[in-house]
Amino acid sequence: MNAAIPLANWQDEQEDWSEERQEWLESMAYILDEYGPERARTLLGELHAYLERRYVAPPPTLNTPYRNSVPVTEQPAYPGNIDLEQRIENIIRWNAMAMVLRANDANPGLGGHIATYASAATMLEVGFNHFFRHRSADYGGDLLNVQAHASPGIYARAFLEGRLSEQQLGNFRRELQAGGGLSSYPHPHNMPDFWPAPTASMGLSTVSAIYQARFARYLENRSLKPRNGGKIWNFIGDGEADEPEVLGTVGIAAREKLDNLVLVVNCNLQRL
Image (cartoon, rainbow, N blue to C red):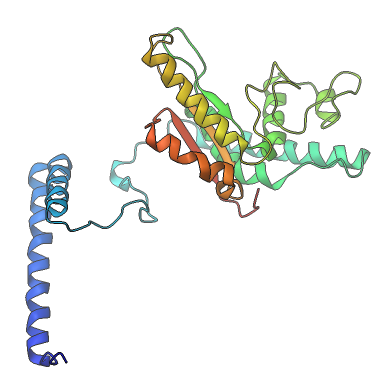
């Protein structure tokens, strides 16, 4: 039977640990102030390696704190006109909703999802305005896989750009109508001049995006494709994130170190 630790000894031990811990924190603060974040990061890496050599497993870092990793003082000014972009986004969101409702008024039961694009509109608009880049002489171009249920918003944006007609929007989910229509979900077989890749059924777009990114690396490593950039952007819903197709293949992206793949999860609690 183990003897109980006297309360006084336990309190002394706690005070010693508190002082030791404070000294370490103050030392790290000094390193950060005097030598900068890069040296502080290097020191932490060396401590991490030392712990591993002593068979001490450091805590996992898969989940980061729910806070912005960029301090407010280091955040740059927004690169665009945020008021104008917000106004355009509101128009697109409204048109997407109106397109679905109008189609169902004329054809009850036609279907179409409203909430998915409504929840993803800001992410997609910021991407279109500031992140997604087309192919050029010195850039390979990005491939965008849109969440399948968010297709009404992409159609509404294309209408605002003049790429789709009002008649086509009126024929949402009715592709065989006179003047042409719009497919329910992204698919290049149905709309070869509009959609670059299929993203439905749920979960399949992630599999496709991973292998698209992996094949791009394959071509680059064999000098069949210039190393001039180009990312695969893949938007999925929170419901797709736990599909077996996603969970079964996402490890490939980590193993192959596919830094040309960006997976964005729209956590809108719609399970889509």
